[in-house]
Amino acid sequence: MGPRPAALTQEELADRLQSVPEWTLRDGSLHRSFAFADFAEAFAFMTKVAAVAEQLDHHPDWSNSWNTVEIGIVSHDAGGITELCLDLAKRIDALV
Image (tube, rainbow, N blue to C red; front, side, top):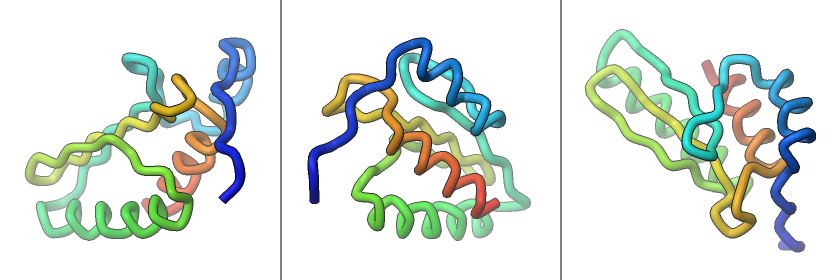
């Protein structure tokens, strides 16, 4: 694996957020909440996200409470949001 991407500047991030309109900035990370019919659907979604995260070697911060999955994405090692974060967000959106 090559070098990890650098954190985006505020200007770059503002521009690129248009590509993930369902995501918001919260506490320095990309954030989105997903609601499903029940726990089983939420867990199945998390399983799909886990496979994508492993492919990218970029893992979200997340939590699950019954039918809701909360996801936060940030590159801790880069100290902010990177292109890889946005790529993960787009791939997660494609799973819904």
